[in-house]
Length: 333
Length: 307
Image 1 (cartoon, rainbow over the protein chains, first blue to last red):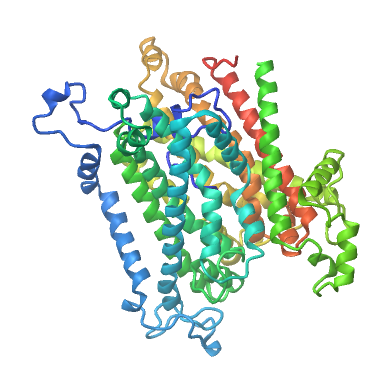
Image 2: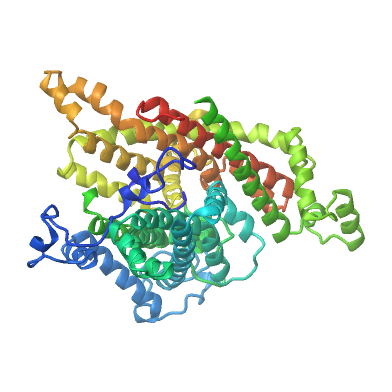
């Protein structure tokens, strides 16, 4: 699994090209410049366009999103996932750890629509209960990465100077380490069976991605006239950063974070498949896929159902990110 | 160009040092470096202490790191858990992973670019939308799921390929694993080519070429493609580093004895030297690939000049 990156690779900038591509170029292509009246009549002066169509970037995006079938489908899937992550008993009342070796590798039967896995556990119950770990890991890792990355990247982009230079070099260092490899090295010594070491690892290796985006985004927003105006009026740097720059620079971060959420779920499953992610008492799709792969010939259903659930989940989050990106940045259409 | 290359090489030094130091610290701080040397048993304290002294592990970590790096630059990567030289492991495993990466890159070029061009020229039509959706699905399905499914279908159910690759790992055996390794990047290449072609198809120079009366295929191949492939080439170049580092999953599924396999063994057996050595080389590959991509960028796009 490659490290999470924006879906549309037109925003791809080869590492270490700081001097070829101006720092804000990457953002010029990934994110909207600012808020304000938009739509087909962007060339008109705001006072003329203001009659009825003055919508902020966010309400405009929401207006687009509600009409986008891709967004509706993925949002429905995600809503369902969150529901069964919170209350798996709603549709799977069984205990996922309740296994009977006598039933190992049996196919589907009454009350057990997906059959049994190699340990004789009910595949349906385990697949439904597996949603909780995936959603927890995805949401917590994304929140951690987004907060840490946008604070560090935002401050570096706003204040510049030595701190910015150091941060840029540090992100270069993290980018040079292959993610799966770093996970194997760091997590192979962890014996805890909770989700926290995995989340911690993802935040540790994931923040540079967001920080790079946030930095570029803040640098672009900093050059806007309204920031100059605020500065001329005597606003403090913190006020400028929080009130004027942050609302206009956050959009690319949201887009990348949404797509990254899907890739973190895939990464958790990959690490669990390699045996270093979550450990067996926890129920996870990655663990189940890994456990089912030796019996692939006799009991393919034990492999297919968790794989399908995983793929649909990741797809839903990536499609959501794609739709949000389209809504926030009409230039890419 | 000369001064630029020198400056980029100098910039690589701190990144290389930082990345290797990070991995070195992870391996040393997180694990017990002598634990793997007594096999499955626990080392008795006296032996452990003697081993630690013998390997210089009683010294501070930064000193160990400097000693290790000094050795690496004289070509001494240390010995693995079974007494084999790490360089010997590298000599047997890197060619295998390199072959796998070459197959993957060939797939990216052959399928990704072709599909991308076809889609970019038909932007907005049903074919375009359909393939775009397929690329989304491919990106969403983790590599290990794609790999297991292809292994199940092609290897077990239909018997087209052998489910696991022999130790020689010739090019013919690596076709399906290469496709699996390439899958996610393949989808990215397709999308990138599509966007790039669709953007450039509206450019003035294309209209000029059409107005001149050039035949369609000549406009596409000589004018449109040449300009549109610049970002694609750079993406594929940078992907070499990602693929070699990410091959660990594919190699595990198809039992390929490449870099990923050796690394996995090294981590399982807590062989510090193997892990740090292999990661060091992978980081170098990644950095050099990125440098070459940046230089290639200037060669392909004359608008970019390095001062």
